[in-house]
Length: 392
Image (cartoon, rainbow, N blue to C red; front, side):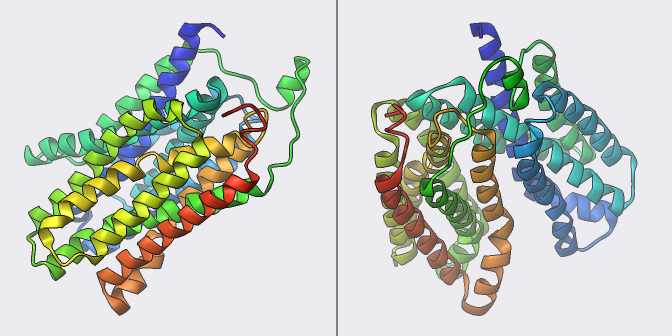
């Protein structure tokens, strides 16, 4: 594969993560305006966004098999058509049913591109370079999460319709579509065998189980923590909503800086050892945040938590892809699916805990989930196959 083609495929991966980040994180900004548009209470409006998450989860889960049946290029071109239809539906319809369907389609498109983007990085790069590339790719999720709420704020402040926010997000897929037309994609599954390349059938091993549990617990712990921080600090420390918002913003800013730093640092360390250290540090940082009585210390603890936890998820996915000699799209998608299940369960798990015991109990639960991640990555050290495959 020549360098220009590799570069185009890498940028498709970058934009695929940016697309998912923009769709997921912009929800909070536009929900109020959409509720007014449909004349519905904001609580029932938030339920319709579950269609977006369901679409993402379903696409990532199914694409583990579809990647070997439907060529990647064809999937991305089909995704572009779906994206155009979904945005057109949002702009022209006043039906909440059509809105929910369009959100589901956007979720499907996002899940397809994200699973392809993740596979491309694990296919194009080897060993530690794979980890650092995947981490840099994931930073585009956070970058879009910073940029698109600002764009949404500017549009909504000028009384421009909320659906134009989704049209702007659609421009990311225009970039993916253009790059797709000029790129050659790796063939998978039976097509490889047709070219005389044997399709590797390798057992995944118990390490994949540990990594899958770690992925699910990490995402559930992270989102369960960050969603309830505003509620916790406003009730416990009498902070106003702007101060609470700044804490959340500090977390994501530190998280993105951490991704950039670790995308270089990871090349010099064994991935299993460094992810175990980072999971341990993240568990301690979250414990300090949950336990402190001094509101002045909260900023330091959440900045530290954002920084040390930024590399955990992508390193888990990278280690998963290194458990077999040849990177398996099914294996990568399986771990991604486990992480996405964590996203789906966020409010299902934490909602009842907050209703019964308060936001502090939800944060403590998140801290316990981070401890599980630490234990899983520690146990992985005894069974991991990435070193035996030469991926130190």
